[in-house]
Image (cartoon, rainbow, N blue to C red; front, top):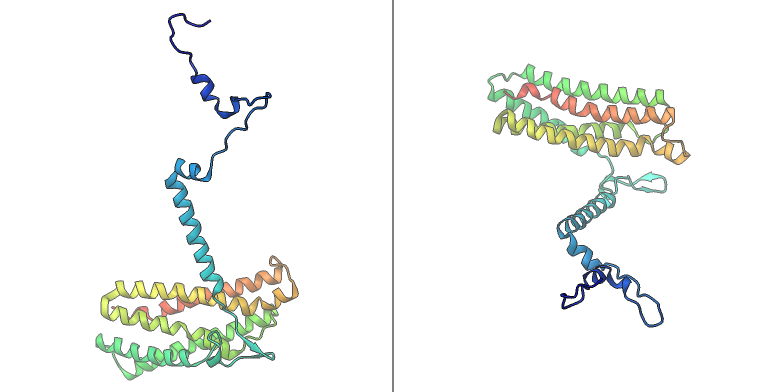
Length: 248
């Protein structure tokens, strides 16, 4: 019952029901208005902007990763020469890095008054012996796991020799900035060589399994994955083992 002292009718309840409560002539009701994208954005602009920015960063990161081609190029079933393919392994960088590592080791020993030709020769022969053991161990593992791959001994020497570049950087930073610089640079190089070995050996060791359609969770394929991880994990350990005594 309406209040006799009320001057105007109360229409707030009717307005709160929105457009759906209004009726057109003929008894048909108007459809309820749906929120527009602009209205949804204005409702919570901070979270929507953060979501859009995060999606943009994720898309850019995926594009950068996917556009990098890690596979070796072939021409008539023959690998392209390294001067025409940046992904082709070559011995120039590993050989120069090994020689430079020996020279830097001599420099580090000289700054600590520990230099001697015998000690420098021991440093070089130790690094060469570890490299030889790595190559032999990987070849034996590939034979035991029965991996059909085009990975040659020269390719293994090239891939395993890239760690000397990081070892050189770690020792030089250790001579300039002490152990803090050594651990920072060597740690970064260890992560880089680990990712590089995983991406490179995965294409070599697991290539035939992917071509044959072997399930990823097969027993033999699991052994290949473990072998790839073991080779990659051994690189940072050897980088530290061959350089930690050169920094005081």
